[in-house]
Image (tube, rainbow, N blue to C red; front, side, top):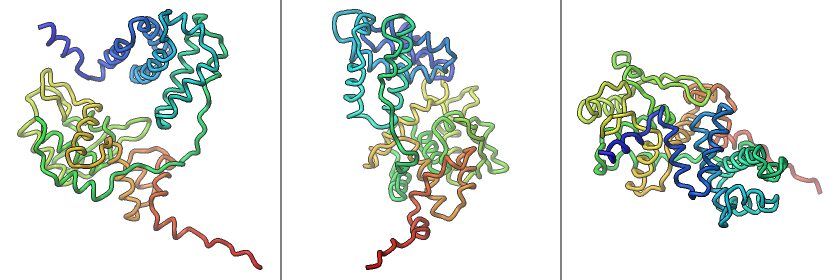
Length: 328
């Protein structure tokens, strides 16, 4: 009975993000947990969202576990920490992690060292020892899945998992509309207008809410799930867990499902955002203006979709000029 109650308590919901924060702390060494718990409370007192706190704690846990390796207390290890120690950890961490992970780690360490300075464990200037990240805006390329990979993903048989109809409907939504996993997770029954054949997605990350045409393929997959697989529930969310208490499907669960689906289809495992990149790239190659693509993606600024121009090679070639020849 206690095991079932604990399992229910850890089921994801927008209100249970604090549980994930606590689980991050519990995975740390016993001697480091009090410090991480105090850091979490320090961040919360400054008004940070629980989701942000969880991300920062994940990075800081890695940092603390690396620097507090001896039998001294976490505070004692921090008192012995030098600028060279901070830089050394940063160099080792950067060798095996990408820009996004390094960005989170940099923010986390700086915040944590400011927290430690407020307790007198480190000097007030130690946070400045965390190296800055140098990067050029739009220096990378969006990692979209190709049209061939998308066709393989949609056409391959669905024979794994207990929620085939639900997972298929989720993939169709991601592939058809390029929405974020959080928007799919937050989709409500009232957002689907079967009579007008439209579907609405909430705004996310400071963007705009978007309305799309309900395509026949999406409508069929949704209807199949709602009629034949969705649990009987009073919840107004479309996608639910298959086990009681039938809470809405979490964004993390969507990511896990997408990666598992790609692996099953023999494709490199990617996250749901790859569908968003593919959606934008597909529209750009079809000749859609950047403003229209921005609106369909729910962005408020055209700058957010500027990177997709780099994958339209035909347009880039049209704008290229010949290299000037030097007169001999």
